Image 1 (spheres, rainbow, N blue to C red):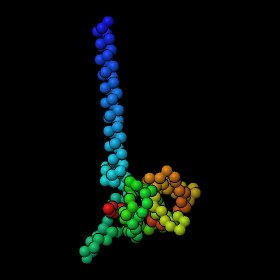
Image 2: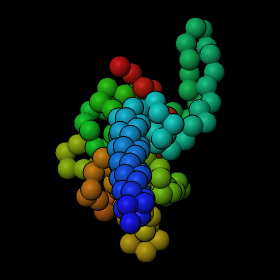
Image 3: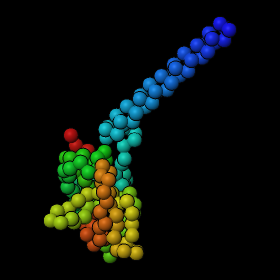
Image 4: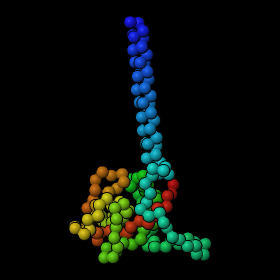
Length: 159
């Protein structure tokens, strides 16, 4: 009888240690995930819509091809992809000829200003609109395609 009680005691301790170790591992993985989410240079960081940027060097300056507009952004709606102070390189968007795809980062007219968000859904053929969403937002916008002014082709990460 004592041997069975001792065996159950040992099994209980081992089970308790296993649960404790599993909880510690889960907490460690959540901390690592959170640190990756907060680090714009982590491997889990979402990159801009286009990483292939063609450029030429002219007279000591760098000229980026297919870039029509450069703008420094403010706000937190596109974190962790874009942070306040980052400079976005854009190509002009012509809604009569150009298309956007889900995942593209676009700049569009919104009220008296402009917003930079990612295309979450493309319904141009059926409704003439795209659905956009900031990477750090829960709400979406239904944007008429004619309000899109630019598509991001790259980001310059600045401190």
